[in-house]
Amino acid sequence: MEFINAQGNRAAQMLVEIGGIISPSGEELERAEKVAEYMKEIGLTDVKVEDMPNAIGIIPGKSDKVLVFISTLDDLETVALHQRESGKLPSIEGERVVGPGTNTSSITVSMLLAAEAIVKSGKQPSHTLVFAAVAQEETGLKGMHAVYDTYKNNSIGFVDILGDGRNISYGAMGIHWYKVRAFGPAGHTLRGGLPNVNQAMAKTIDRIFRMDYKEDRTVVNVSIIESGKVFNHKPEEAWFSLDMRSLNNNTLAEMESRVKKILSDVMEETRIEMKLEPYQITPGGQIPNALETPLVSRAKAVSEFLGFTPNMSNAGSSNMNIAIAGGTSAIGLGGERGGQRGFPDEWASIPNMLTAAKHVYLLGSFDW
Image (cartoon, rainbow, N blue to C red; front, side):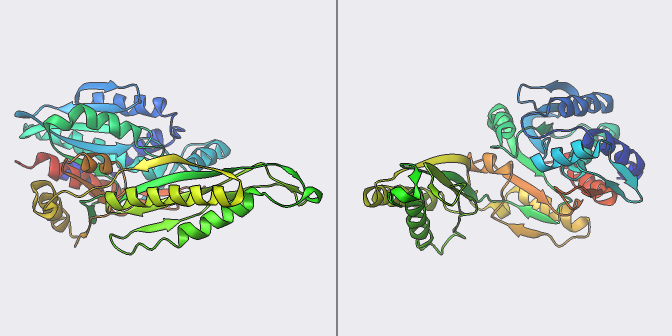
């Protein structure tokens, strides 16, 4: 803990380097290589950059069972845009590191500091510790899928590091995103307004919103609607986004079936072809008696030791979803990282980086 307390300046410099690398989803290789370089420097073993590209390093334990810590490599596309427009690295301003690319990557720095503290302690952990900075979190959790497939059979749990641990997620909300597409004949207004993709879109959206689900925090949203470009021409195709969420996977499956029935009915009524295209499916799930599992109870105790009264949630939505959907114990450590994520003046808190590192250190060094 004393080691971590003394790392404020170094943590800030590490974040300038790692966060300053432009790394939108699918373009994380340079950042992954930098993280792997740090992993080697701090003494992790079997360091590698996998194809995803995930950066992975290991601290061997007394057993072959593994506890896997996860951080996210990729940024939102808007962050990459702001980085390119800025043309400069983040800056250190007091207790903040300011600039696009700092917010999400602050957690990778926290993970590295915690791993280094465990190595420097000289104490071999009870179980092998895996530290994985994973790619493509923003575009389908692809990096996490790869890590989970590798370690699921020997794991005692997965820890998705998202913040300083004042919030702890132990269950996962299923999130299903779709594009609903409509195809019909184009033509000038003078040729008549029907059939028209927009009529089919309107009917479909209205009926979707009329689906009545109140249990399991189930919600439906339509956010994006794209159609014609000019006043006097009916479009040949259109689409809208569909966001469906629930704690109950069976409910989501039922909702998808109902949406398909709505599309079938609307096609018959309007003579417009309709298609439901999955865009991103984030699985959900719940671990039985999760609050009583060693991972959740230990994380809660660590949070309290660090001065928090943790908010416990069964509705997480992050890399941890993959593990929970697979029936494996997992948590998300949420909380404060900084502010203005996705904006040009994005920033990360140096004290919060250190607190997150302490949480990971205490979880990793615990005698399970």
